[in-house]
Image 1 (cartoon, chains in turn cyan, blue):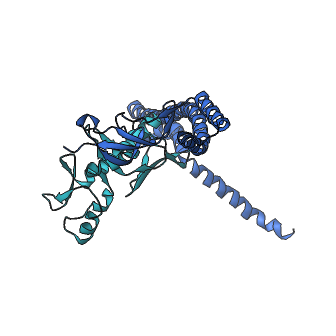
Image 2: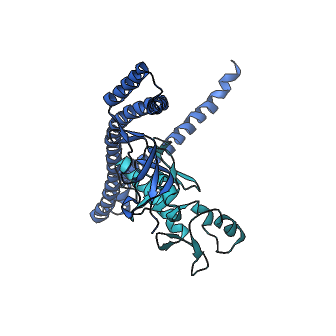
Image 3: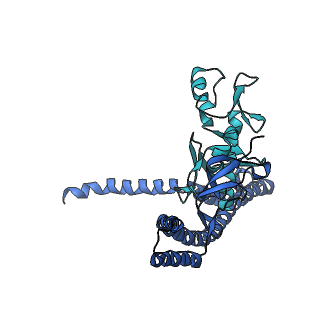
Length: 136
Length: 204
């Protein structure tokens, strides 16, 4: 039976933990810290970075660095709260075909759920590397 | 004390009840044993000793036992694998913790070292103090620390933390380090502290 990974997907930071011997244990990410910034970016060379690395390059690449994405999950474009939050972030946003929100990262549009999936994906990959087994 | 004598039957009943509760607890095991014995005593008169019925019943029983055996086997193998993995992880963690200990100690010393370095750049350090800075640097080198971050290298978020951008004069300079505000350090593969840098940005 594979281990179960618990992930706290936060607006600013995310964390993950497993249960070991009946006790929860927070896992460190590949960079060695117990929390991972909930930030996704596509660098100038086109590679996707998530977490601490995305945070470190955010100043050089504000248009393609997506953060605070959890605020936009499940909202429709044009909602009052969305309009307010939209003004506080540098990345571009538009109305999706289904009335939802899409954010722009390096010429491509992504739904907030997709950005969140990238964060979850990184945490999962880090946990797998740390535990030496697949998490399914 | 006298009154207790009348309690004995009740006490016995209590014990018997406990006994049942106890069996109830191991019901799985008990039922298995009951089935084991029952066919021999009861099945013979009831089924007229039909060997087919007996065989079928035993076959069913064997299947059940096999399934149970497999469950235990799986559980044991899983526990064994968990144990081996845990041993491996303990080993890794020991190495990791040692590195982390060094990192933590160095992190605390770095600000002082940085100040010395900065003072040296400004030429405010008497020779004797410059010697101390060299000693400290020597100690860092012995620990396996290497500095990261120099002007002109390509910006890499794995090593650098961007604190600002500068306009670049040519496209070749785009996305390279234009100024190092604070040197970073790494210990082997582990980054102790990223270099705080400004990054050149070329407007097309």
